[in-house]
Length: 152
Image (cartoon, rainbow, N blue to C red):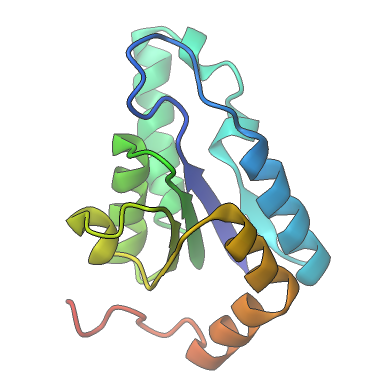
């Protein structure tokens, strides 16, 4: 199973810094504990210095990450604040029938409501659902078959 961890990096910031990325390790650790064979794509782990990239490298990285999101079986989007990059990754994953879990208080945003299979209120809820086997059960039951067929 391939899980793509999408989530806020710069979000609504007006500077060239990034938000705390510790959520990625918490999600990765929980996934690996519950599903040892999981393959995780973490854009931050692949590009920890991306805010320092020049335009060409940044452009290539942006498109490569959105393309990788499209290959995932599951996309987990951590959105305590809105993020245009994460919305793009969700869109790509949605069109390739990934199971999408959004972790966010932004339950009224259309980009989230209409692409996510599940919307959870916070990171602790997600971690609990991973650890108690909920995610594995849901994915096993859905067999990752066209999870958005009604919307297409």
